[in-house]
Length: 286
Length: 137
Length: 132
Image 1 (spheres, one colour):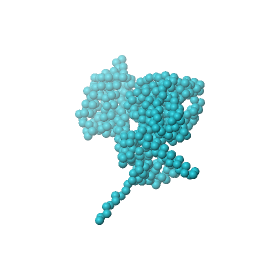
Image 2 (cartoon, rainbow over the protein chains, first blue to last red):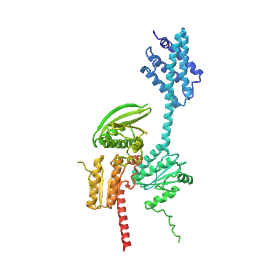
Image 3 (cartoon, chains in turn yellow, green, purple):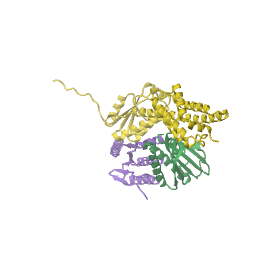
Image 4 (cartoon, helix red, strand yellow):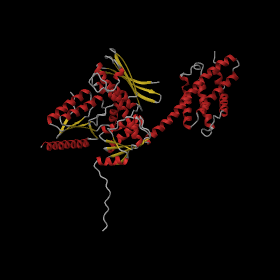
């Protein structure tokens, strides 16, 4: 038996597209601030064209069929574009669901036998449901991409290595120190040590909100790695609260040189490379 | 879901094979664009596991695979030997524990260097350890 | 058999590791170095590992051994030029090579060795003056 639904969809393509577009209008699915009506129409038409082209009697029940790859590709493209442009999940979902409504409506108009109508509707249902799942997956993936990119940017921005003096580097850490951040801090610091030939690195943690065992471990790791490179590491900016938590948690920082302020760390660094800072002697006025 | 993209296998019978393995792992890791630090961690881990294999089982095979999970690509290494096996895996995974004369950092240290670590061992039959290092992991 | 060359420079021994090490090679280096320290009565050992891309627990242990063995034969050891990636890996592995002196490059390493040795001599002299 020839599949009724496939026949109807292929024959009534234009009508379905009209219906679909009508549905979108009713659903407030059109966001003219984000995408023009014209673009949306072109997008929808492309999607429907590829759907009617790839759908056949053989693959109708099997939405994992490779024939639908093209459709899925277009859908993913639309979903990702929407995620980036700032469409809400509801708007993106409504886009696919309104196609389903249009298809079902067309079927009900064209197929008179209730039994056939029912089975065909069920099939359309499961096919389109699968398409919506794909849309959602890619939509979320698109959003995640945005978040990941931002995270990367923040990590990059927030760990500058500053050369404060010949042979002395400073690294102000702002925000929480987790393991991936520690990795970036370590890499940047060690690379900079090699490039500048510095022998002292000051890690300023004034901007770290809290220290727990894990953060302390990350700090100790950074210090150990710096030492392996042949440079000394001073940790500065230990606030009273931090000193308290460190002791209460029983964290052993005894192998690390710590200073309360960046100024005293710098002073110590000067001492280590045998430099002296003095007030300029004012020449006596005769 | 983890998908295997390509595969290779290396036989380990003597110490010099370690260097060959390191180079292969480096080649594959470079191919997927893994950064230098992660590459170094992966190769160090491989080096530790191959040593164990040579020391306790006299050799074995290492399968190298490029795997992908979602957006991430990674290198997977499977070390299998037909050696004496490990009696107590929990104990072997503890820092500082060793039956040979070493620092006892091999297994637990290796686990810290890679993203995923799986060990299966049957006494008198052999040990299989598989590790994965994700490109950005 | 492969061997890593050891150069004698005055009171110091200089080793530049240019190849990837396997265990046997590292063990040979260890025993060769200790022999050389004895033979030339060296005061310092400088190991340049700037070309080494991998240090695992075995290699780390060999470096530690060399340092300790030289120490009891009255020679200081300085390891120079470790790659950042290697340093990060060693720390992650749980092997911060405590007790080994490190320096950024050969030049700094030499300075460090010299300062350590003059320190020792000064201390010796102080000891001597005590006994008088």
